[in-house]
Amino acid sequence: MKKLTLPLAVLAALSGNAAFAQSNVTLYGLISEGYVYTNNVGGKSMSELKGNLQQGSRWGIRGSEDLGNGNSAIFTLESGFSPDTGTSAQGNRLFGRAAVVGLSNKTWGTVTVGRQADAMSQTLQGYESAIQIAATGTHIGDNDNLFPTARINNSVQYSGQFGGLGVKTVYGSSDRAGAPSDNRSFSIGATWAQGPWALSAAMHDLRRPGSGTNAGGAVSGDYGAFSPFITSPTSGAGVARQTTSGAGGSY
Image (tube, rainbow, N blue to C red; front, side, top):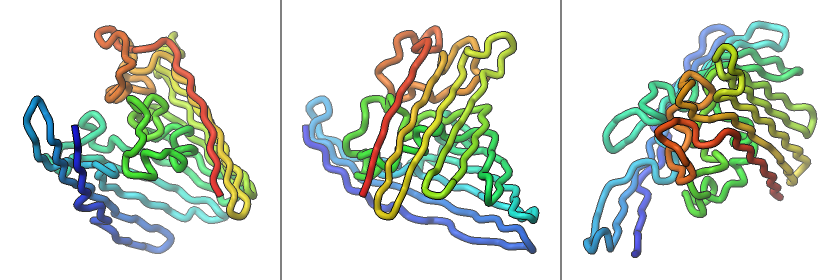
């Protein structure tokens, strides 16, 4: 089988700023659409438009409010969608890519809460071949979540930069009384950068992700969306525990 893929557009579709006193709000977006020709689909050829080939189409709003003394209030709302049909992505969520609010300090770092990517995907996705080279070399089922296929609900993130060392940690709670490990997520990552060098390492630990007994937990609706490793889709969680780790470097 031969497949021909031509990206038609990866565009910064929306970009603008509105500033009021010490506040700023940015509306932004990106549309990714392509053409795919496959010469053998059940013995026949097929031509199709295919959205989100190189990047996920999205639009969003981000803003900050200067609180003085190096402190700022921040927020991000980001929605993914299909440019083919106009439907929402990430499990048909309005702001499935990100929905966070937080506080930032120029010295001590930033704390955000809401729905956001895990620390491992944030730390290592710059080394992921499928992200750097237009989906070439994708890990089967995105089992390390570096794309990331799943975001973390009910999460608290801390990120800080101390000289050349950057750290991130994200905890997503189960939000279920008496069952703190039923659909819980914890991840941590660190990057050291000096001149042209950068070295990163991270890990992500999930307990009963996508649990059928706790849909309100850390991972719901998008765990295993493209994964062949789900063993029991009728009962919910594919695994009792999933731990991944990785490292990367660049020059």
